[in-house]
Image (cartoon, rainbow, N blue to C red; front, side, top):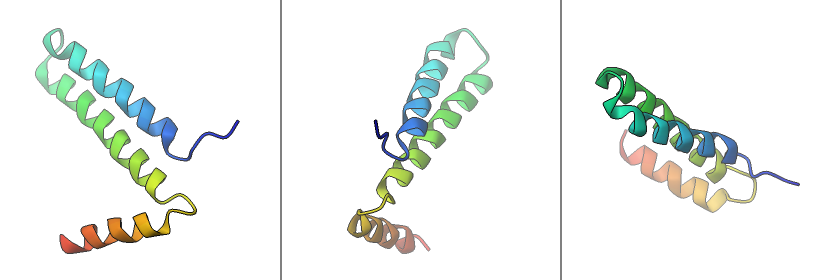
Length: 71
């Protein structure tokens, strides 16, 4: 069974983000915001990893164009 590169951090980030949102009212806001941010970072990095997988060179080039527009 082949798991697509970047899928594990994306799924993990989704779970961590959901946990941070559920705990929003039961722990201090600073901690829940940190948990949500940590989860969102995993989602973004996992998604970028999936975009840069072999065979998706056109998508990667488009993504790099967008990033270069912000420089």
